[in-house]
Image (cartoon, rainbow, N blue to C red; front, top):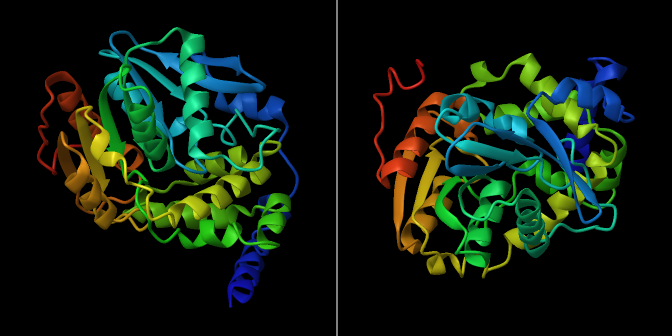
Length: 323
């Protein structure tokens, strides 16, 4: 059944033409020209050269994107918050312009947390607030356990953290043979299908957004790296002790969650709410897995309220993303 479904998807993708089939890689020179700006920097952390952006002034806020995404997912937050914060966002290993670590075939949480710590050491950043979405949220709360002395406040947006079913496309791409096929070919249609599934409002999924996600998937090595990330997540997602240490996080924490999230559902949020000793919660009606993309103004303002006061203040829904 899975193979039949995959072949149907591939057939639909083929109708859009060979250019969108995602065969071959995009040159790094082209991707760097299109997806860096004057705030982009690169730094070597061990054997991995990591792409990041360092913008704004004020207390440091570190932002971690989700699986199969990139630092660009935070564009709206940066526009809203850069006048009040120094914002550091990074392409995680196997993602964006950073790309895969050639020495790895699994990206376990210890590796991700230690890589983040070394990255921040390189930048000389020792005290900051930390926000993460999805996989980035999983890394964020584990980092708060690893280095509680460094994290002032923690914001988790639709974060992974408890046993759950994997999203279909990630579970499917992690399968033997299918995963190897995905390393060769990543059709734009599949990327578009993923983004539509992650959003609560399909009308907010633009062709430019799909192009960016697809282009960065085609960075040399990223398809193989992402399959290895999916396989790591699949192994971890069924660990009954996955969230066993959440209750040890004493950092003040804000949960921001889309009520229409099909990837990390509200049942996961409720487990975080139950276990975190110092937690505030905001959920967004009609929003999916990535509130910082779907409703950047409202979610950023809710984050700023929490960062500044430790409390949350929600704007009326009718005006929240009106600027």
